[in-house]
Length: 361
Ligand code: GLA
Image 1: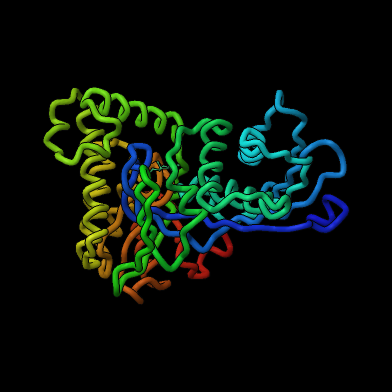
Image 2 (image 1 turned 135 degrees about the horizontal axis):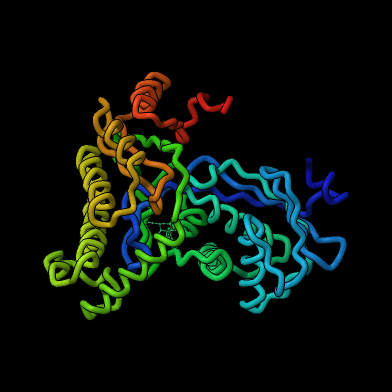
């Protein structure tokens, strides 16, 4: 179905936004720390026009489902809640939003930790900005998207995903200081490319486990007498904390230091070592990995040409990312990794780059 078929007229405008993969700096953004995401080729497109009645209407091409938003007392659930959140944060920011008709189509895998929700929020806000000529810049788009997610989707997320979707491209990595929003666009290390693989294990307990980790970090910062864990650079200080706050804080402090090391300029070999160390820290100290992710990461780490690999995103299932020597990732490489992974009883798939392998899936 097209916009025209659903709403009886063509859209007035449209906008897209990509998903993201984070190379390093996991669970640091809500600690005012440092992150290193890049955009992925998969994106979300929102076509937009004015509604013919007094309600917002949202159609998802992926779900083949239309949702009408009655009023603020009846917020929608599921994918529409993110768009409803975007409209509400715009209203709270003082803008008048007329009833809208939205048509959403996305190639960002859902539930893999590649920020399909941020892509949806950023694409929706971009389209609304265009339609109504709103004086909002790309950083504000990210901030409004984050507010939509926190207040209307119930995830106490940081700002990384929305900043990456709003500001990153697929050719560079975006270093972001999540406290100051200072950023630097950097090339991937010379001679390296990335591969993103889905573990096939959906994220479970992602939002409750996530919000719990965030609360633990806030408690650790309070006990250490700092505004946020970003303010701790000496990892020894974390040893004074009780279990498990000591390990949660140790992850955040060491992870921030790993990102800052990359910022100084590192070889792909060193970048890979830092990714491996990040995974171990997420697994053992932060406890957001699952056996499937550990298995896939280990297979990747032991594959020729791979500099390093780690889970990416919040964890609790979803995807992992590896840094690989340029030219190494092809159908043979993928088959080799997927074959070993399936021997452990799992079914994975390659999400980036597009190797034309998943088309039948
Ligand atoms: C999710 C959140 C981000 C970030 C990551 C973990 O993707 O939305 O803000 O905290 O988890 O690094």
